[in-house]
Length: 189
Image (tube, rainbow, N blue to C red; front, top):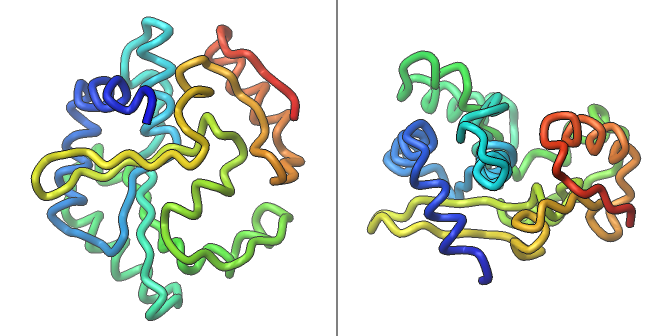
């Protein structure tokens, strides 16, 4: 995948991100990925000459376990992950079972959400291809990059709505991103 090696180099330079990935790898929740701002923001920061951790609010960890989609089962994993970190990372790592997103998504965001079949599929539903990047640190220390739309938009700093997603909140998300990274190009669908 074009830009995958560059992405990995950028991500490996972040000590906090690597600490999170190593810890999650040791806990090994099923089908896990770290995605969202913890990944794409570091690339935007690198390309814009900013501190790698500029604007990083959290570390989103998705995993997939369809055997029990109750909140109680997810909470066991959330607590297990939290216990593995010291502050401040303990408060920044957010873990969610992607097998249960469809249970709460429409109530929270006002859009229907069909059940997923794996964590990587969640990336196809992100608001923009620029955001749709996930990584996992493998047992042999290689990094798996999952980017269903590729990495071109991210490295070109182009924020556009994900095709066919119907992103009613895209203008708000685009305005927020443009305020943090003025060099972004906002492209309508």
